[in-house]
Length: 310
Image 1: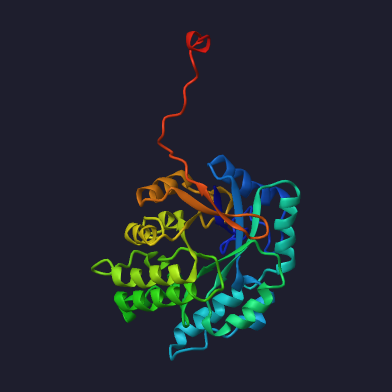
Image 2: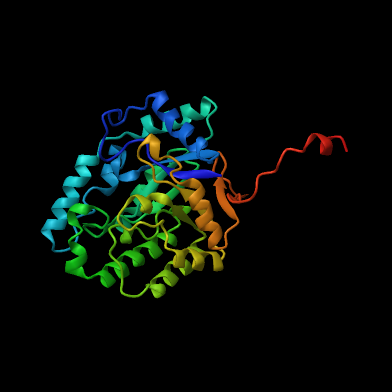
C-alpha cells in the first residue's frame, strides 16, 4: 500500500532542506521511514517535470498564451525561479535508494502543457520511470493553485475556472501520457466553490478517465490547505468508484514529515466511497491491485493460556 506522490524538494525550503539537486541519503531515507511508520509499504517519488532543466527546451514559453500580461509574467518568473533540478541526479538518487533496499518507485509528476506533449514525451522515454502521474497546474498562463494569482477566480468567475480546469483534466486523462491523475480537483485548493457541486464536470473527467485507462489519485494534500478536504471531493470519488476507476493514495509530501500524511484517514475516505483496493506499481511499471486494510477492524487478540492449550 503505497504513497505514490512524494517530492524530494520543496518549493519553499526549510532550514534543513538540502540545496536543489542535492540528495543526501539520510534525507531520502527520512521520507521512506516516515511513510512506513504511518502505514505505507512503499513510496513513489514524483518530482515536478517543470522543475528540471532537461525539460526547458520542451516546455519553456508555455505561458505565452492569452492577453493577460500579469498572468504571463507571474508564470514566467515562477517557472524560472523553480528551474533548478537535473534529471540524472534525481533518477540516480531514487535508484540508489532502491539499491539500498528501500521500497521506492521512480515516478514523475508530469505537468500538462497540451502544446508541448511530443517534446515532453521524448525526454521522458529516456529514463526508467516505473509510472507517471499527471497534473493540471496551469490554465494557459494562469497558475491555478498559486496564491499570488488566486485573484483570477474573482475575475474569471468560479464556474468558468472549474470548466476550464476540468476540461484540461479530461484532456490529460485521454492523452496517453500518464497512469494517474494527481490531485484531480486541486482547483478547489483555496476554498473557491461553485454554488452547486459541478457534477456535470466531474462526469466529463470520470468518463475520460475510464476511456483513457487512468487511475484517480486520492490525496491528503487538500487537508493542509484552506479547502480542508482530500482530493478528490467525496462526490467525484464516489463517481469514480461507480465507473470502476482504480485509485492510488498520496500525500503530495514536499518535506519528510509530510510523507504518508494522514495515510490511514485516506484509507477510510476511500473505503467510504466504496473502494477496497488501491493500484500499486512494481519496478518496471507493471500495475496491480492491493487490498486496502480496514483501519477500524478489531485487531486479533492473543489467545489466553487456557485457549492455547485446547
